[in-house]
Image (tube, rainbow, N blue to C red; front, top):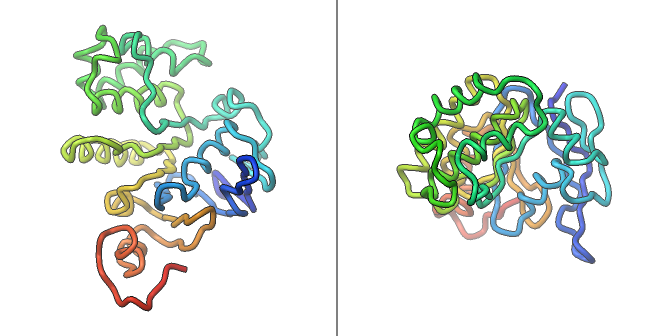
Length: 243
């Protein structure tokens, strides 16, 4: 059984249909990449799973139970956490305060989890009393990931974690994603950096204007000439189309 099963999901903004009946599965323990251009519906998919926007049709099932219609707080409590696009740390709070906010639904001791985050991101430990708004973009992304981990997620959704970061920082972030995968966390990764995402993905989907148009293993899509032209900057014969 899939950890996450989406069937015929539709989401509309006003009169515009952003998702047009997509279906996909995320298997437990996998890294699943969702790639596509701006406006394809990638972030909308994550927000719908999180309960942040309503669906107009379809069902979302997580760990055997239907979660579509649940409140965002209940969905987090079930083990689904999202690292949002743009990081969205609390700039006037310290690193430690941001991390503790990530565990706001927990009542147990947080120290072991804080140490785990510091092991993953030593720079956060060095800056534990620093205001989050004074961190670099890369450090803020580390903090956003660490904050989500404080909830001990079973499914970690990441929305454009490489956006706006320097190449060396991007390498570090993707290395951490692989480490989290090795620790057993299931990851649903939305990413415009298709090359980096497909290289670490167990499976992947291409989303175009609200439709899923391709799927396969990360390697299969990485090697597909249609994906190379559309998302990896490669060329191919003009008469070939995505679909």
